[in-house]
Image 1 (tube, rainbow, N blue to C red):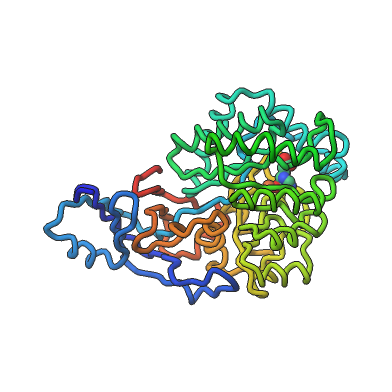
Image 2: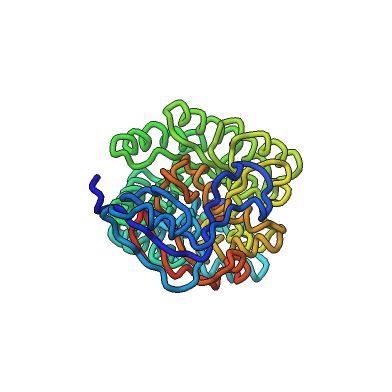
Length: 415
Ligand code: NIG
Ligand code: FE
């Protein structure tokens, strides 16, 4: 690599590196490393150094480098990682929202043929091109909000043809996107109404017919399942995930959203993360805390459905690693603003700024099996964002209305 790719960014009033923080357990704000009048040196897409701006500038003397000067007071933090979304969808579920507010539950709506199935109908009717364009618009919103890595699930296709269509659309977005895109196959979202056979037959169909195509086209190395009373049983989920694990895939689960069970499956199967956990109790919390599985809080789903938040405080105090994601989807979490949701979760669950920032950065990275991002230090990806303030605590205090004034992904400015 030539010297011309060396860039110095700064000075930033405060740099919150999030380095040297533990992957698991509670965090206090005084554990956060803050560098004043800081700079970042990137070599291509990687960080080469982080430190005092003037010292870094002096260090580069005589070298061929560019400086991106920051004139205004700003706080720089790692780019956020939204590690759980369903932004590959068509259609709108405003009718479900109105019905829920009129007293009909999420599960009752699903049982009556609405819910996820209604998004499947709309998404099946959409062309790949339309799904790509819808995702690109949503990614534009993510960039404005400092997201530099986004996970996107399939799961509104629910047939070989339409799951492949969704995964190919996600692959196309990934190829051209300014941010990092991580695809996940959620063909086991619900058993589709038009499938002729029982749960096991449907899961076998995915394993035998869909998985080889996914592998062949290298569409994803991650699989998800919705373990829930009206979705997939605990036994079925274990069967499915163990088969996928044997094939070498990374696993994640939607679990303990309305009834407990999914978290145990996740831990037993060595899933990277178990997401939702709104109804997890003491037993589940202690079990997750002892494991390596990340607990993913999805406050957007609690806000959309009107139910309890994931017990993030209890999980952290028990020693679990808690990540926070938006769950952006047309049904339970249509908002899509991670920072607003995480700030609200912080208020209700009494989380420190350190815990919330960790949950949207290096802890979320781990849920995606990445160790190369989410922290600002030498060797990591140059994915970062700056907020127009002088105090990092302002970021959560404004509950998402203070937005980043600059966002960089792999060292390139994208906002
Ligand atoms: O994470 N819980 C299951 N799946 C999604 C909701 C999908 C939908 O309602 O369309 C979730 O909340
Ligand atoms: Fe979800």
